[in-house]
Image (cartoon, rainbow, N blue to C red):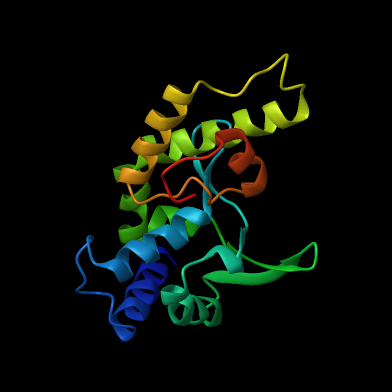
Length: 173
């Protein structure tokens, strides 16, 4: 089964013109962003799946996403009336060699993104006076480190809270 998942995923990339793209190609960056949107870290530090609102995913990845759905590697469903995408099975993270390497390369940025989201949720559920947001310097440093990886701070489950927590930044959320 493992080899078959890897084979199907790579075949879909090839059929959509992605297989020979460099990591710096805008289409490949968008594809990585799509899969990073579907990724989070579990309590034990393992990579797990999470739902991502379809409307937050890059338009350039839509055709490939559809092929991944048709191949049953991704699932399209609805959550609170909104279309969301999720990885069909977490085995995809372990057996698709290309995807398996991406989070490893950007592990620190993914961890930072998770920390930002957790801090934003804690901050929003408490009084801002008793639990202030991070300092502007910490926010700028964190957002800068995340954005250098190609991961977006706004690719979280509660982007509106993260946006309020971070305040105005020069970086794309």
